[in-house]
Amino acid sequence: MSKFVVAIDGGAGSGKSTTARGVAKRLNFFYLDTGAMYRAFTLKYLQNRHKSEDRINMELVERLLIDTTIELRQENGETRVYLDGDDVTLAIRTPEVSGFVSQVSAIPDVRVWMVAKQRGIAEGKNVVCEGRDIGTVVFPDAQVKIFMQADLKTRTERRLKELAEKKITTDTEEVAENLKFRDKYDSGRAHSPLKKADDAIVVDTTDLTIEQEIKLVRKIVEERFRSQTGG
Ligand code: DC
Figure 1 (cartoon, rainbow, N blue to C red):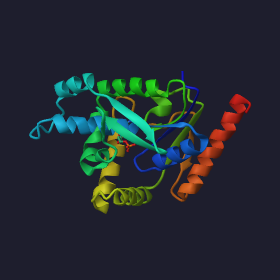
Figure 2 (figure 1 turned 180 degrees about the vertical axis):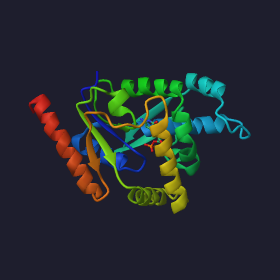
Figure 3 (figure 1 turned 90 degrees about the vertical axis):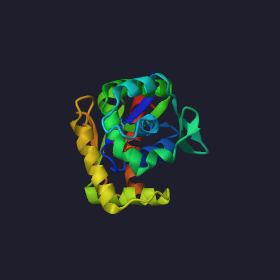
Figure 4 (figure 1 turned 60 degrees about the horizontal axis):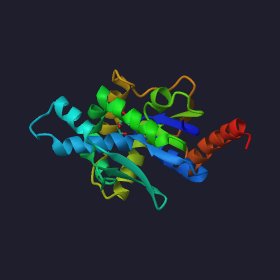
């Protein structure tokens, strides 16, 4: 069992990652980025598929799932993502992966595989876990559930800035379209869609700075942590 779980869900670019990372760092919890895991598997699928196939090749997906390792390693205060032993931290953020990840994430067997891994990673740890189905499916008993949202303009600006920092070239329209497409696809899928858990606290980050959103969520977590542990 995990010790204390903070589940943060929300749409693409809602501020989840920055907040989850910041809160985990300040509270010394493990930061579990489940989107990075879906992205890593998508990268592997793209590397192995035939370019001419535009439909998802389910046989290939099943074959790859049997033989894939994804690790999240905390190195020098940051999380690095390893796919079959290779560091793919940067490679999973390209527009190509972003353009394909929703389709791969909608496959039920991929989700079952991921959820088992995510629970395994969290075992025995205090974690801040972020994604789309964390409060609803992965950790329905999480001690704190947050659902983050922000308007599209703000989310697009944030994503553009993040990509520029990683020196990944793209343009405003492509980013906005991808955010819209993924939210629609992620919310509309049959298996564990992006959805606010009934008992989640909604945090709208449109008018908040990064510092403000981290502070707000940290305060919620600390209060709950103290009342549960008496510490
Ligand atoms: O958090 P992110 O934008 O890096 O996530 C990438 C994609 O992965 C997202 O569009 C849908 C999928 N995802 C998911 O289906 N379930 C999760 N728990 C996390 C991500």
